Image 1: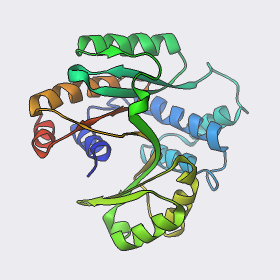
Image 2 (image 1 turned 120 degrees about the vertical axis):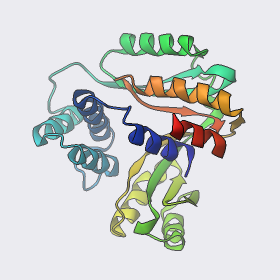
Image 3 (image 1 turned 45 degrees about the vertical axis):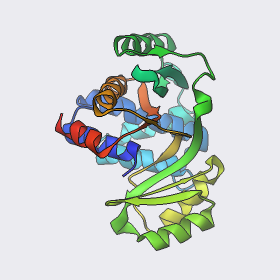
Image 4 (image 1 turned 30 degrees about the vertical axis):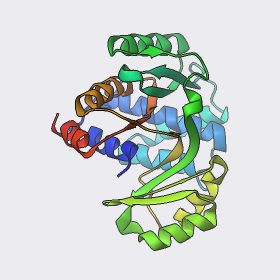
Length: 251
């Protein structure tokens, strides 16, 4: 399993992220808002929105909350503070590159909290562009291998304009250019595949190799960043060894 999906699985097992239902609903609502803002309010034509709604329903988010978030994204509902999506760049310990994706209604609060955690964790904020060149923005999908065998997934992905298909254990991942996001999502939906995760992600062009203890220090910092209400995702350029994954799962 790739770094991102494996890390997400560990986080879910540990139950550390979104421990408070209120924080979870806030995070889910912001994802719906941004999805509706980017692709419109119809989940039948907006893959990202459809997935965000599915996640919200799976976590028992009330229907009214979902509908209100969609309307905020499309501009029909103008109540509440404006929400914006921001990508901050920074360094973790050992020179690790970090891209920190935020969805927030308070930019000053978000940057202050991120700067504090980076400093405490042995890192620092970076200027715009200082880190971003080390990543490519890609369409990203992950789903259970039981939903579609690898050969069929590969064929589907190629037809949809994807760049890469990988299987690791029980998961299959598809990555592709940003402009292929809708076509890949449409093909998966037509094949009846229940996607576990989909979105636009920052994927490192090259990965760093660190010792297990160094890797753990980086992932602890990432975990603390991801616990912030304003942070949706943290992307990094660390190649995580099997030994480091085992140590992370054991913590």
